[in-house]
Structures are given as structure tokens and as C-alpha cells.
Image 1 (cartoon, rainbow, N blue to C red):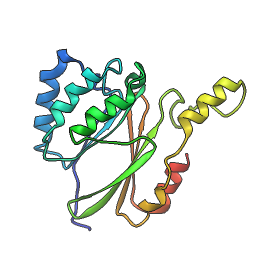
Image 2: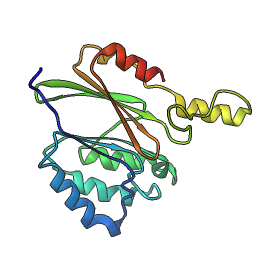
Image 3: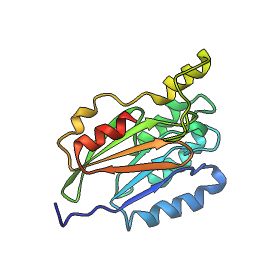
Image 4: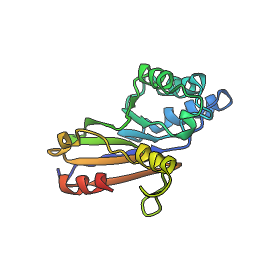
Length: 184
């Protein structure tokens, strides 16, 4: 494992639209030549419309590297998340929503956890579970953790991804570190 390395391309806020199709397609074609894994941290679309997700789906369809993504607040805007997820999954993109996946890359097992994190803030600046009922509901909606992450314990690396306007990635080299990150 000492000699193993993984190149990860990570991005967020793609805000795909038909007008950006050529640029998005070119970017993904180029990045597959250099990366072992692509992580996308939300705001994949501009206004949460499935035709906007199709731009990303077409760019990722047939890539030689795995693509794993979570939705962001822009993707939720039109209330069509199931259609967006279906469009992206049909193109081979692994969509995570308070869930995880485990990939084998370069001889390493890499666990990826997708969490919802928009609206609730960022680590160290989150809303709290205190005060008005509506705000407390927002806290619980955006603060819920993925289930069944104990399956990740025996793996070499765990990446924790949150959609929060920008992509936050944390590498945990040991399972106890990963559990502490997920508890935040």
C-alpha cells in the first residue's frame, strides 16, 4: 500500500446548462486522462431541471474512470431530484444521498460517503439544534448522517463528501478517524 496512489479530480458548482455542453464535455474528456476517480460535490445543474442533468450525463457516459456525485441545493430547486438522479445514474454516475459506495482503485479500497450539507452551514459555522421549530427541522434535514457506514471500517481510505456550495473532502486513513469525521 505504501507505493499506491490515487489521483482524484474533485469539483462542485458545475451548474450545467445546454449553453455549457461543449465546455463540460471537453473538461470531462480531458480529466479522464489524468484521474483515477472523479468526485462531484453538488450544484450539478443550474435550476434542478433534468435536461440540465442530461448535459452532465452525456459528458460522463462512457468515461474510463468512475464518477461519484451528490446533489446540491441548485439540483433540488425544481423538485425533480429523482429524475436528475435517474438521468445521471443511467450514464454510469454513482449518486450518493446519505449513502456510500466502495470502489477498488489502484489496488486500494476507497469508501466514499455522500452527505447533504447545504443550507446548514459549514463545519464550525453550522446552524444549531436550538430555537424555532422550522430552523430545527432544517438542522435535522441537513445534519443527518449516512447510515451503515460501519461497512467502511476495513477499507484503506474513506472520503467524506458534503455538498455545501463547495466541495469539502477529507481523507481518513483509519476507520476511527472516518467515524469522527462523520460524527461532526
